[in-house]
Image 1 (cartoon, rainbow, N blue to C red):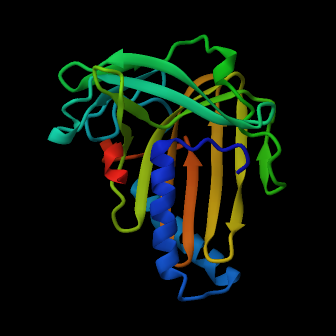
Image 2 (cartoon, rainbow, N blue to C red; image 1 turned 180 degrees about the vertical axis):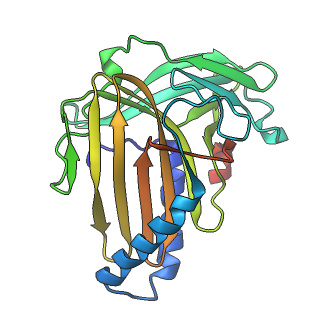
Length: 255
């Protein structure tokens, strides 16, 4: 989808998904077979979801879920012991600047591995952009002018304000399935529905949208299912995924 924000955790997952798809693309299949497999995967995936008609207190694992605040716990692994601050950095591609624009949206201290970030009701315009503008005909958007703030992860910094890690609320990538919880603000009601298949010659990726965003903060789930020759990525706020936990990624592990 055009104008899609990719934070550090999404970039990492994208890399992992690409590697997995590259290993399986040796078994070439037609686009028709691929889409048929996606349909089968979507049916199987429904078993992992529990329907949800409103805000929930937790996701079945005891983690509080609130669209208006982020309540997190740093993993107990000793490699994260120096993390003292939690920050949210919002980045998106600016057509006007012809470059990526990043701004810090929030910052709080971490106490005994725990933190709470209040997201607020009034959002500065510099954090908002038209995420759903200029979409392909296969994706319908009720109001393409909706201004969106999309938060998918939290950055960890030490006491000297040096960036160390990325943390997100999700599930481990087991058995070809992974899920993340995102916090999404919209300045107006907007519905986004449809699917788009992207093909870069050696893998295919289908993005499926089933979003009903209300004005204000919303909870959105991003699920990824690995299939024979690519991945199915679904964005939905009509269901919840159980078993979420806070997962970390140390930046130094890139080197």
